[in-house]
Each structure stands twice: as C-alpha cells, then as structure tokens.
Length: 480
Ligand code: NDP
Picture 1 (tube, rainbow, N blue to C red):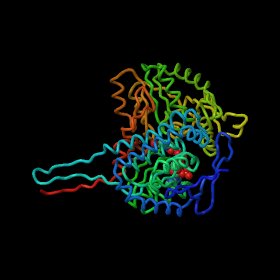
Picture 2 (picture 1 turned 120 degrees about the vertical axis):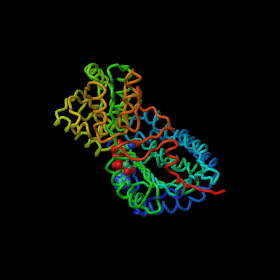
Picture 3 (picture 1 turned 60 degrees about the vertical axis):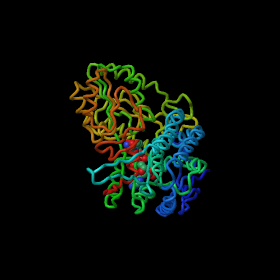
C-alpha cells in the first residue's frame, strides 16, 4: 500500500514518529493509502528548511520566480488525469468535476500569481518639496498555509501560489483526509525546478501539525481555510504572537430568487449551487429564498430535478453526486437530517443515505435533500451543514429577502436572481456577504478580493489582496 511522505527541503521524508494514519476512499469505505501522522518535530524540520531557503528565494528575480511557477502550472496541466483521479478517490467527488473544475483551477492559480507578480507595484508619495516617501513590499519569511479537504488542490494552491510568487517560503498542510494531490504536486514542483525548501508540505492531523504551524515562532504569516471553530482557535493562538493571519471560514449562503428572475437559469444554476461536490463547497447556496408568487412552482421543479441527479460511483462519467468525504462527515450530515425533522421540516426528497452496490457498497453516500417549512431561526437554517442539503423558504418583498439573507452568523457569499437592474444593485449593496453573485454562481475572476464577513472570516485572499497579505509594507522617507 502506498505510504505518502511529507516533502521537506525538496525530499520525500517519512514522519519522525514513524506513525501513519489511514487514508480512506470515501466512495468505497476502504483504506487505500497511508498518510504521515507527523507532529511538531516534522514541522520544525520543515520550518528550518524554509528558513534556509528564504534569502535565496526572496532575492530571486520576480521573472525567474514567475518562470518556475508557470512551469508548475504546466506540470499540473500535463498531469491533469492523474491529479483528477487522485482527487476523486481522496474526496469521493465525481471525477468529471475534479477534471473540469478543481484541477484546472489549481493550474490557473499558479498561472495567475506567476504573472501577477510581474505587475505588482508599490507607491510613492511626495511630501511638498521636502521629501519623497516610497513603500517597499517585502516578503515576510516563512508562511504557514493550512487548507481543508473539500477542494484540496484548488484551495492548497490558492495559498501556495501567492506566498511563493511574492518571495516567501512556506510550510503547508493539506487536510489529512485528502493528502494525495498535494503529494503529487510536490513531485511537480521538483520537476519544475523549484529550489529545495521553498515549499515544504507536512502531512498529518490538524491538532498536531496544524497547531504546531500556528504556534511556531518562526512562522509569522498564517493563511487558513477551514471551519469557523478551527479559525477561532487559530486566532486565539496567533493573536498574542502578533502573526498576520487570514481566515477563510464557513458559510450559510443565501440564494435569493425574485419572482421576476429568469426561472430556467435560476433553477439550473440553483441545482448546481445546492449540490455541486455534494454541497461541500463553502460557496454553495444552502438556503434558497424564493419570492412568494414564484415559490410553489420553483419548489416543485427543483425537487423534480433533484430526484433525477444520479448518485453513484464518482469514477463513472455520468455520476452527478459522489460520496461525502468521510464517515464522520456522513454522520454529521445525517444528524442534521434528523434535526431538520425534529424542527418540523418537511423533507420533499432525499433525507436518507443512498445504498450502493459493488465497489461502493460500503461508501458514504447521501441522497440530495430538499427541505421546506422551516423557520429561518432554527438550527438547520442557521448552522453550516456542508452536505447535499438545501432548505427553501418563501419571502415577501425586498426588505424581507434582505433580512432573511442576512439573518445568520455567516457572510461568505450570496446569490441574487432578478431581471430588475436597479434592484440587483440595491440588494447586492445591502447583503452582508464577501461575494454577491447576480444571475450567476461560482463565476470567479482571480483579480477580485475573496473572503467572508462576520463568522465567515477575516482578511481577503485573491489578486492584489493576496500579494499584499504575503508582503510587509515598509515606508522609506527620504528628505531632499
Ligand atoms: P477544519 O477547520 O476541520 O480543517 C481545516 C484544516 O485545518 C485541515 O487541514 C485541518 O486538519 C486543520 N486543522 C484542524 N484543527 C486545527 C488546529 N487546531 N490548528 C491548525 N489547523 C487545524 O475544516 P474542514 O477540513 O472540515 O473543511 C471544511 C470547512 O472549511 C467548512 O466549514 C467550509 O465552509 C470551510 N471552507 C471555507 C472556505 C472559504 O473560502 N471560506 C473554502 C472551503 C472550505 P485536519 O484535516 O487534520 O483536521
């Protein structure tokens, strides 16, 4: 059985403890590889390698860093099939999705930041006829990068690419539930000519490896994507150490549909935004709000389409819905389905595990679920479930739509469907969300700031924001 190894100083190394964890294929419910159970000692070795590599990498001309990052992007594209298959087996997501979205977007992350760094500029300010101030933006040293399991390579590279492009070195930890694509990326980095120690990948548990990265005194920058509770713990550790931190956390995103919307597109996109990747995308619209005149027809048509989604082996081309990521997560989502019933919700489709056969007989499959008749304040409508579960609630008029959309502790993204241009701008402005999509969903321009409000996080990633996050501004004032 394959034993994945960490990647430290350009070499593939086993954990110092010698211990490994099981890596489970969630569609089969079986162990298919082993992942290092690393600890603070491995993190320390990775930090030493990253510190040693930092002066050389920081002094490397931007054009040369750019060339290497572009070679990594090319390496991802050249290995697209292997990476997509690895991601599919690690996560249980349909192979088609990994091949067409996750892996190509990982390559785009490298391409984007490899070229963005060539245009990164700093400012100058003249103080009357007295002095010239200019701002140096310098890499901060060793960055700690921690990413979750739902879009493993995409979110991992979303951090690695800007950190490296700006001249930092990094110690990165993917989720131990989905380590395989990061493992393959390490080999691609070596082949692309990335100097040893610039990127170090330490596999293992969040409670050991993640916590050691956050607490390490030599790591002054932390970029984290994951759950809100973990984000709060990281903030508690990092604040007294004065680290620069960005936290991309959970969501309970509203999908607001006005009666004048193009219903066909709202339905087709709403189906995707509810259930893509089994609802395990932080940007999924898990609360659909529909204006009263359109409510009944929308519910009927969405349920009809949801029941037609094919739940099946993620390796099969015609599968729409694969497995959820783990037994633990399966249990969590199922517990929310019980809760929704207790809270008086009416389950119109799904609401149960999907029984599979053959290779997937012991896998973690849940039928896509549509729930109605729940008040907005109940737990099902307030807490992040992060599974193939969507609620639909009617509203009356703009004010109530905004009140319901904003009435949760989260504020990551929102989707808005209307043909009324004035209303689109008016409502978008009042939604408490880091991103508002109007008549679309998951359309991304990598130059835009990305992140959440309220309990969905602090700080922003993406474009210029990421380049600024990973650099330290220093003002130089020259009197003349
Ligand atoms: P977790 O918060 O459980 O884990 C995220 C990462 O942090 C994992 O690598 C995890 O390791 C690690 N970790 C866990 N505990 C600690 C700790 N104490 N210190 C440092 N690191 C730690 O999230 P999930 O992996 O369950 O991911 C799902 C969550 O991520 C959802 O809430 C989702 O909304 C959110 N998310 C947010 C996005 C955004 O952009 N805002 C995008 C995608 C997901 P391990 O796996 O070993 O526990």
